Image (cartoon, rainbow, N blue to C red):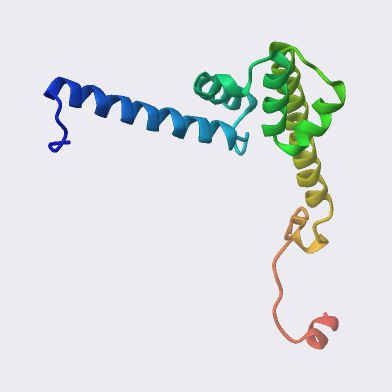
Length: 151
């Protein structure tokens, strides 16, 4: 920058423009590679909307926005949403959230059933049987059984 024949103000403006353009390019690349991953649908939507501001030329219509969002959804949600061909972004997001809730409830039920079946299938050696009450009626005799038989 020192070799440029510019004022300090012009150098600062040029550097800011370069850094700004680099940041925008990085956000565009991030948008292109964005997928839901481990995020919830709500978290994915927030990141999608944040990054889409930097990629306005890539999603110029509501249709393109929906297609791009749908493509980034987790496979198990996308197979439920895609056949509906929803092309209104807010409705698409709500349907994805509902599908996510259904998947979550199914997973909880499956885990609950798995836990119940595991308890039901434990070997009987793990079952605790009630202990018998041992009562002594009278004195306890110790000695030769044949000698006691003659009493």
